Image 1 (cartoon, each protein chain N blue to C red):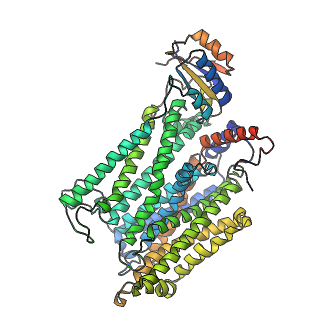
Image 2: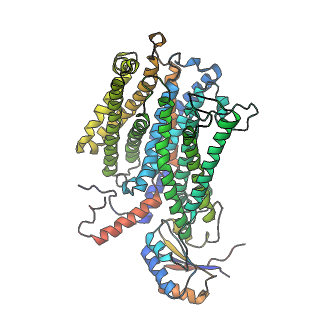
Image 3: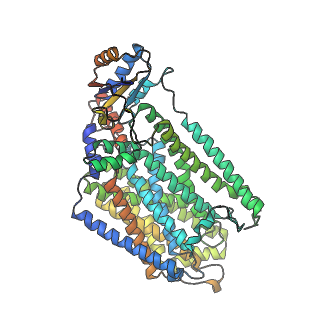
Length: 180
Length: 458
């Protein structure tokens, strides 16, 4: 029993057109596999019932601000409290001199959040997944565009969905078997 | 007049073979010679660093009053070279400059290799590099904490952040191309290695959406970061009182110099690489010309920095500052670096006003090499020449590097080139997914305006 159906298209416009037609037929759990982020496909996929814009930038912001607060507090702790030393006429707690490190740590941890966020949301750092190994699927990172309909879709029915996909001009249609 | 950014309209598969093929096409004798030379220089670097650490930095030419010399000059020079990579990949991305697409990965690789060289020097300069970790606030039982009001811990934070963020940015950009390599690699071993590095990327549209959002955030973070790094490096000097160092013009002046020298290094590397890999249709005259124009702009900012410094030295009325600027630099010891800096950084780039010079790869390459020399000389002028002529004549001294200093500089150039050649051989150095995106956009643009198709894509 396959938990998804995959269809291959020649170019991004064909895939985007297919997405529009399938949505008109009531399909909702659609996704695509693309060799580059084609705008047409994204525009076709984005919608209230489908995927929302990424919220990862907010995560980066929160991490950045937390790191800045921590960096400032640490500098105050070390130089203003634990080891107060007047250097170059600057008092032990001197906010202006604490700005560079505060800024750098904000950038550093916001960047960590950005990269870890995309790995987490994209479920990356794995050896393989359910779609790798589907016949012909290696073309998804080269020159072909793949559409995915999840079996969780209310409109999903293996035979009918296959027929619907064939109507949209798919080059090939695959039902990958779920591996052990 | 609009030169094309891409000559021809290759299919996705052809583009993939062309750009990924650089990693599996066999290298010839030329490559072996290049690896042998750079490997030998890297060996020299390792030997001389070992000699320095075992014996102590007395083997360098540093003395009192010139306590900061080659190590700091090389540090500032290398880290400045890195700046163009971030400028191309982050700032030009935010400004939606399409011509960055085929050279950004290349320039980011250059940044990483250059920052690695730079990071070597502050640690060596400590004299006892095994205490370098004292710069960071680790839980110390000595209760002597890093002094974060000094510019030196700022430097440690800025440079380590810069390297880490550049690495993340570069690697994130590589992931889709590594997946592409995994799926088209000719041998099983390569498929396994690139597959591991690709982290399981499959190009899912929802992942691409997060990816693009995050890439934009990283570009936005890297932009102020790159401006901050050389500003903080310049604070090492500007917060000191030495005549020739104590100046508020330093942060923008250093940042402009950094981007200027970085673009020169990009051209120094991209012109031979384009020839060796026959990438003239992807890295076109337009790319080289745009780099040349940015060299001209940043070169003028650097020249403006020199003029402002001279004006402020005169306007301050401070005898030590005036002596430094108008007597010690042009006629004191090591004045050759002053003239080299003026000729290579101010006079030579002016040839780039001529379109013909910007389009001639030979002229461009020689100008770029001279700018590298000029910018190194400028760092020497600022750092060593200023220390030679302090406030009191009784403190004055002279400086000359030893063979160890020169060997370490040559060694880092070799090590930098070795790392960069390795990057060129093992990884796709032109971003394939971004090139595909651009090619598809250009094809659509051609379709909308069939009459001008080939020409109007800039």
